[in-house]
Image 1 (spheres, rainbow, N blue to C red):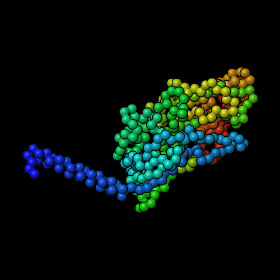
Image 2 (image 1 turned 135 degrees about the vertical axis):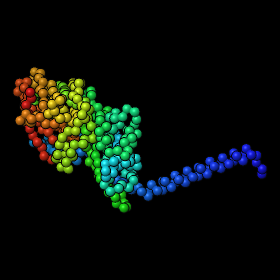
Image 3 (image 1 turned 90 degrees about the vertical axis):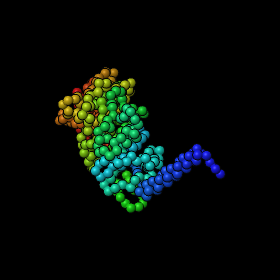
Length: 357
C-alpha cells in the first residue's frame, strides 16, 4: 500500500505518541513496584488522654471527672512522617480508620529510617489555620522543614463566644517513634493530648446545697489564641504531663467574655467550659477568672473564682488538664469555694481550699 507524504508524516507522529505512552506506562508500573517494596504494614491505635481512668473523691458518687465522647471526637487526622533530624518528610495518606471512633488505623507507610517518628495532628480542619488552601496542601508546603515550623504556624483563634464541641472539636497532638524492623507489621500506639483545658464547677461535691442555684457562669480574660501543639516539656510521668503553658507571643486577653447563661444548676456544671492554656502570673496580661452568678434562698450574689492556691499564689491553666471548682459552703450570699484540680489521667487528687473574692 502506498501512502502520500502527508499520510506518512501523520503515521510517524501517531507512532511516536504510542511509543511515548508505552514508555510512560512502563515507568509508572516500575515506580509502583519499587514503592511497594519499600512500604510496611502498620496498625496504629490512638489513646486519647482521659478515657482510660476514672477516679473517686470523698465518696463513690463523686467521680472526679469523665471525658465525654465529644471531647474525644476526631473529625480529621493528619499523620506526618518525621526523620531523626526532625524534618517533615511525608504526609501519610495510606492509613485508614478501622472504627467509628477514628482511633484505630491500618494501612501502609514508607519504611521509616532509624530514629523516625510519626506525628499526629487531629481536628485541624475547623481551626482556620490556612486562609488560602486546605490543610493537606498547607501541610505539604512545609515538606523538608523542621516539624517545629508547622507547630509555630498551627495557631487557632479563640476570640468570641463559647467553645462549643458540637461545632468545633478540640485540636489534639501526639507522636510515636517507629522502628526499622525488616518484616511484619508495625503495631503502634500513640497518646493524644488536647490543646484545651476544661473547667467544671461542682456544688457540694455534686450533692447540692439547699436553696443554692447557679444562674450564670462567665469566663473572663481568657486568651484569644493558642497553639495546636505545645512545645513545652512533656513529662513521661502521667501525673505531670505538661508542666507549663505554651502561648503564642501575640496572644492577648479576649475582649468578649465567654458567657454561659440561663442556667439552673444545683449540683454541677460540667463538660461545658473549655479554655486556652494561660500563664496566670504574666505581667502583660490579666489572669483568667470565673464569675459565678447565683441565688441563695432568693438572694442574688456573684462569686469570683481565681486560679490561686491557699497561699494566694497564681497557678496556670495548662492544656489537657481538668480544673474542678467545688462550692462547698454558703453563708448568706457569701460563698466559700473549695477547688479540686487535676490532670485528667492523674491518679492522685490535689485539694486546695480557696475563697470567693
